[in-house]
Image (cartoon, rainbow, N blue to C red; front, side, top):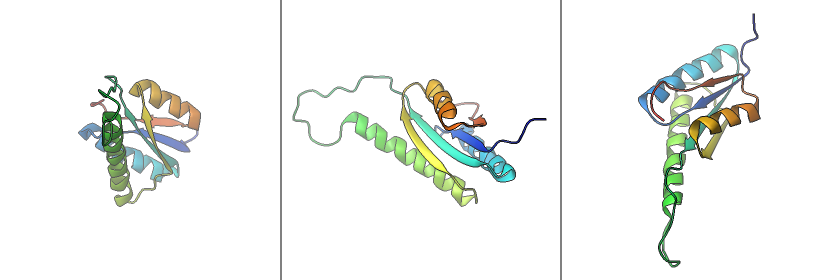
Length: 119
């Protein structure tokens, strides 16, 4: 029999499936006394180019990053409202599957929890 997880990584994209995954990850973290880490990966599908050099205001990338941070913060708020604790959050950019796996390896996650639909 293997040991229970001590570090769980939850990958969220804001979809209904990831909300359910968050609920389950929080329950497992509580049941096992494990740390819960939460990541959102911003997929980069198009290059961010601005025409000209005197553009005012945030770039498209900065707007996407702000939206992604708000999504991540909102998910953490929901988890904490349910009574679970989040040890650390991560906002990454790149290919979601590769970034989630790499982060799981970097932090030594025993378990990665994701929704079954969404990004």
